[in-house]
Image 1 (cartoon, rainbow, N blue to C red):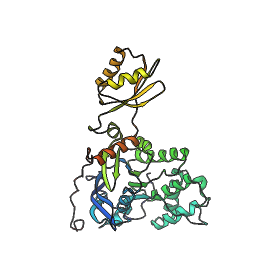
Image 2: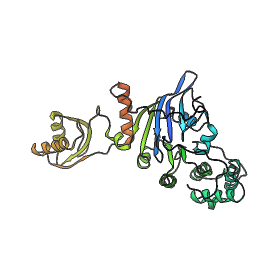
Image 3: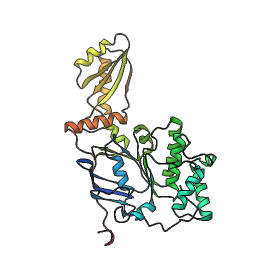
Image 4: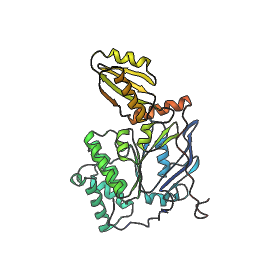
Length: 352
């Protein structure tokens, strides 16, 4: 969210000729466990990117390194053109970090909580009061200004954490599981706030398990598994799947005895029976192009099947992700993410 208040301290410039975020061959181990194993990706300015993976896949470790809260074993991360290891202070001025869990304090109201962090960030006097009010208005915390910060609902607490991360008006936001544990109403409210921030041109990386919502909010999705990026692209490319899959799920219903459809499908080319249903079957067609799918329907009608419903089932992101991991485990699909080129270092200090 844009701020009319002057910055409390010098904000380093971002080199907009470079991507907003560059992660290059990042590694981090904890003993024998490789939490992050050669992760590479980049995020351009103004993009909203979803970060997806199972618990333990390496999401939080990657994000903590990006937020200067952990150090890489090897590899580099640049935020706004600044190396997170060599220039952590510059990075923190540009970055807003919303962790998946954070502490509140007893006997401290929402207003006092935000005032504490605004002071820590260097805001003073009228600028501090103005900025706190802007953040509370944006996150709809103004009615809760006198509420004890540790006595709020999960949704209210998440809005407080988001507000804290926005106090210094960062241009890049990293949100770790912001919707975890929220009820549907609170998720809608949070999604609305993120959409507004995106419209203002913020660069946002969001980690979440709610893939359907990420697909709606994000320009692209990063999928990580076992510490490695296995896909980086938009939701549509994920749903289409790989050329190795090249299949479409069709739901068919007929009038009369559904066994006729099953008998037909057993001998039809390009057709596999996924599941028998009360009025027909879900069929997996080994093709994705419209001409072939239309041809399957035409053959059904020509062979006398009384089809009254024939439609392609929308593939869910969760299913697409599981299918992709299965293909990787079988060795039939390689990672779809390509390491980005590392931006050239601009001075000797960055090149250390």
